[in-house]
Amino acid sequence: MGEMLAPCFMVAEVSSSISLLQAIVIGVVQGLTEFLPISSTAHVKVIPVILGWGDPGVAFTAVIQLGSIAAIVWYFWADLTQVSGNMVKAIYRKQFNSPDFRLGFGIIVGTVPIVFFGLLIKVFIPNYDESPLRSTVAIAIASIVMALLLALAEQVGKRQRDFAKLGLWDGILMGCAQALALIPGVSRSGSTLTAGLFMGLERSTAARFSFLMGVPAITLAGLVELRGLVTNPATGTGWLPLLGGLIAAVLSSYLAIAWLIQFLKTHSTWVFVWYRLGFGIAILAAVSLQLMQNV
Image (cartoon, rainbow, N blue to C red; front, top):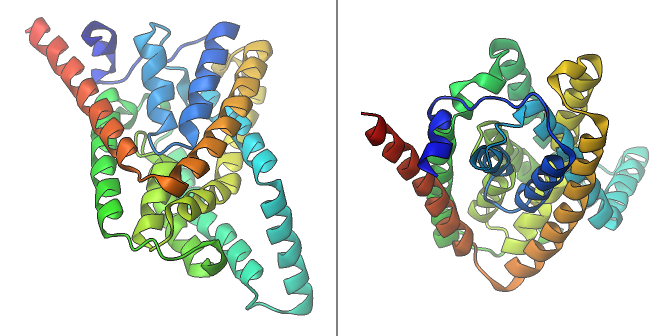
C-alpha cells in the first residue's frame, strides 16, 4: 500500500482515460461514500490510486456526483415537492413565516457559501485538480480532524430537535458547514451532519436535512464540470464509461441514503468516527513508510 500511495504524497497523476469497469467501480465508491460521513472525494481519489488507475480528477468526480443527486431526488421526492410547492404558495400568499418557506429559503441561502467559495477557488486556484490541497496527505489530515469534530458533536449534541423544527438559520449554519466540503477529505455529509449534531438536531434529522441541503450544491458542481467536459472533451473520458459511472452512482447512492437514515435512528455516529480516524492514520502511515524506504 505504501508504494501505491507514494505518488500521492504531493499530488497523484490525473488519469487521462477511464475504462467502463473503472468508471463503474468509481461510481459505486462515489455513491456509497457521498452520503456517509466519510468523504466521497477522499475515497474516489484514493481507491483508484491504490488500484493503480490514477486520480480520476475533479471533473469526472463532479459529473458522477449527478448520479448521487438523482438518487436524492428519487428518495426524497415527496419532501422536495412538499417543501417547494408550499414555498411557492407561501410566497404567493405572503406567508413568509410558514415552516416550509423558512426551510426552503434556508436551503437556498445555505447554498450560497459553497457556491461563493467554490467560485473563488475556480478564479484563484485554476489548477485546483493538481493542487497540494488534493494530495493524499491533505486528505488524511482532513479526515482525522473531521473525525475528532464529529466525535465532539456526538458527545455534546443535545439531539432534541426533529425535522418539523427546522428553519432559516438552520439552513444558513449548515450551509456554512457545507462549504468546508470544498476541502477534499472533509466530506460534505460529514461536515453537515456534524453541524446538525452541534445544532441539537436528532441524528436522523441531521442526516435527512444534510441530504436535502446537498441537492443544489452537488447539482451545481456537477453541471459546471459537465459543461467543461462537453466543451473540452480532452479533460474527461468517453461517454459510455461516464454513463456507466452515473448509473452505478445512482443505485449505490440510493442504497446508502436509505441505509444511513435507518441506521441513525437507532445508532450513534461513532462507527464513522473510528473509520475516519483509521482511514486517515492508515494513509499517513503508508506515506511515511514509503518516505523511510526512500531515504
